[in-house]
Image: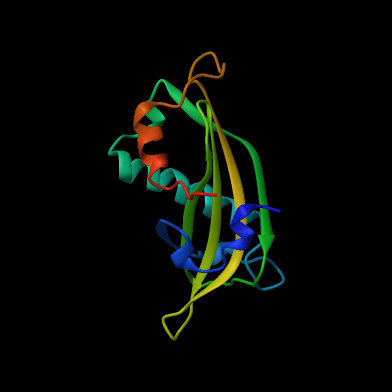
Length: 150
């Protein structure tokens, strides 16, 4: 069980990243397909990092590759739902970051309804050799603002 599964409210996350569902996110069952939730998490983490650092993280000498992911589904989503992705850091190491994430659906009454909780582990590697390296300073500083005390 991830730490994010204990955080069911948007206020439990230091940052929120807005996203909209897309027409093609829905599958034949009429709801957002399960694999798309991972895309939302990935988009939110990397978008937030780029906005917060002011750096195009794709151009850094070290890149964060996903080493582990998980998702627990709490509520269906469907196009045209508007979302907020809650971001927090469960563990900030020297070469990796463990993100605890949540997807919230914007309800008509301006409430945020929990739809999923997840976990992403980014391991930083040299962009050319793909060998593990230290987290770039810009990324580490930004990630530190998301750390939730245990």
